[in-house]
Length: 142
Length: 142
DNA sequence: TTATTTATTGAAAATCATTTTCAATAGTAT
DNA sequence: ATACTATTGAAAATGATTTTCAATAAATAA
Image 1 (spheres, rainbow over the protein chains, first blue to last red):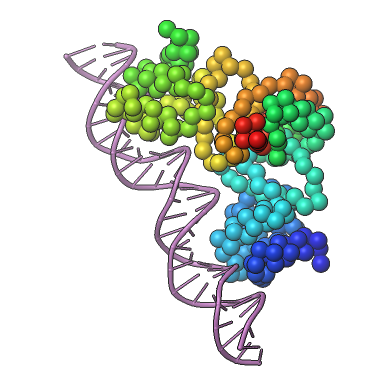
Image 2 (image 1 turned 180 degrees about the vertical axis):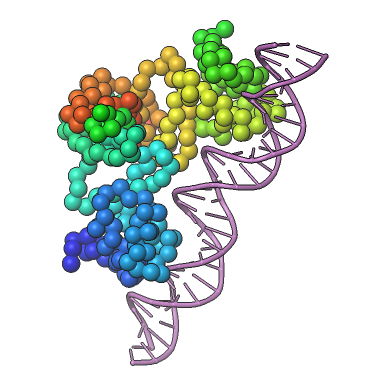
């Protein structure tokens, strides 16, 4: 069994929740999906393989997965919440192409360090951060 | 007349729009307001001084002010769009206290530079960016 | 195993910020 | 002043997300 299922099960046990087929299937499909899926998109994927799983359940399950750290939530400014894998993936920032809508994940340790410095200068204790750079990607820029 | 009104008027003339009392009053109150107001908050402020100006008009006017560069729009992740002064204010990032909700505006040129470097490395042409650091502020951290 | 308890499900309705509609109103140009 | 049409504001629509609630199904106890 993949580590992710163990994490979910442990979280469920700790909280006195219940292991259900739906939660298992939704996690399964989420894990098999490339990053940055909206609830709507995920629901369609789920429905394709498992009839009878409702949209509400998908939504609620994603919230649950967020709570137990298996997925991260991001809103790139279009009012739609997108979920991305979190377990086993380190923190990253996003380059967002405003033409084709593609997201590129990037990482620059120097920026991370400077952010901590910045926070410290303001006696601010950071818990998380979000850096989004909007623009035109390589493909669209030609 | 403040420069901001000139900018709005010029934008209005260029686009073949019309100068209205409502637009003038809403800009007036927006300018007199500290940064990061939601449409709802601004509407209440407007209503206090000028009866008969509707919520829709406030909302539409803020969109107009965004278009002509007088205000910037930000969503800190709670699904509410907030408007902040843009003319005469340089770009800045935000430290957001998740306890008291206060926003601190910060600026670190080195971070800006590194972001451009990062974009360049991915052949990405940045148009704007958004950096938000969530955490606990000085006051709340005691 | 069976009974009991109660978390979960899913369809539908509710919520809430934002956007659109549309008839009445009011700038602007002629 | 007249004509033209952008703007207004109230109400309705939209669309993502959340809640409701009766039916169902996990988990635990008997």
